Image 1 (cartoon, rainbow, N blue to C red):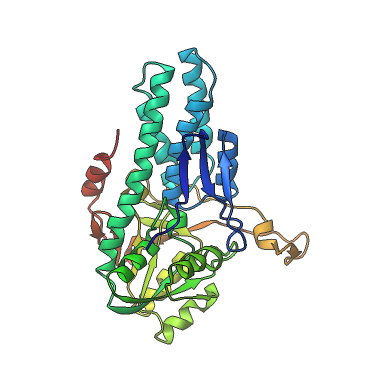
Image 2 (cartoon, rainbow, N blue to C red):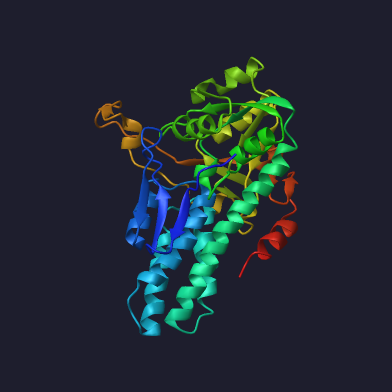
Length: 349
C-alpha cells in the first residue's frame, strides 16, 4: 500500500513542495514554497495541516530560510534566521509539532560556525525530522493495528492520515497497518465541520487505498454508537499535554459519547506531539475566521451581522482516553511522563 507524500524538500528547486489540501478532492495540486512567506501562508491557509506534517513544515521551513537569506555576514544571517524561525513558529498556535520542528532545527543551527555550515546542518536535520516522522507513523500503525479486532468498524474524526503527516498517517496509519495485516476494517469518517477534512481528505485517502469508508455528519456519531455500528474510535492529536488531548473541534464530543456507550476511544500520536511542559490552561486554542462557518460554497449561511465562534480545536481529558498509540507502543493513562520525556529527548539535538 503506497500512500501520498504530503510534504518534501526539492533540492534542485531549492523549495518545499506540498500537496494543497484545500483543493482536494476536486483537484490534486502541488504547491511550491520557495520562500518563508509562502510557506507561512500555506500553513495558515491549511494547504498543509495536521500536527506531524506541520512539524515537518516547520523543520523544512528553517532549512528553506537558511538557504534563502542572502547575507554573508554571519551575525546578520543568524538574526534573520531567528526572525524567520519565529514567524514559522507562530504561524498556528495549537499544534505543538510546528514549534517542535522549528526549535529542533534551530538548535542544530546553533552549532554552525558559518553560513555554509548552518545551511548544511539545517537541511540535514530537517530531512531527518521528515524521515523520523515516516518511521514513527509506520511503527505507530503497527502498534495500533494490534489492538483492533480482526473485523471492526472504526469511527474517526477530521484527517489523521498521510495528508496530516509526511506519509502513512497516525489514526489512518493504524487502519492501514491493520488492513495490511489482513484485518477487515471499515471506517466511518465524520465529515468534520466546518472545513470537512473528514469528508474531503480522509475519504479521499481511504478510497484511493481501496479501504471501505463511509462519510457521516458529525452529529450522527452518537446515534451510530447507540445502534451498535461503531466498535472503536481512533483519532489523531495536535497536542497531548499532561491533562488533555487537543484535537480537531468535535473530538471531545465523540469521546464523551464513546465513554457512555462503552466503546474504546484511542488517540494515535507520535511522541513529537506530546507536550510534557504544559497543561490545558497554558495552551492557546486557535480561533479561525467567521467565513469558515458563515459561508458554504460561496453562499452566506449565517445572517449578516450575527457573530460566529469558530474554535479550531477542543480538549479531551485523558480520563476519557483508553490509550494513546505511539511509536513505542500503546500508552494508557495515567501516562508515565518520565518515559515520555526520556523517549522524546532521545531524538532531540
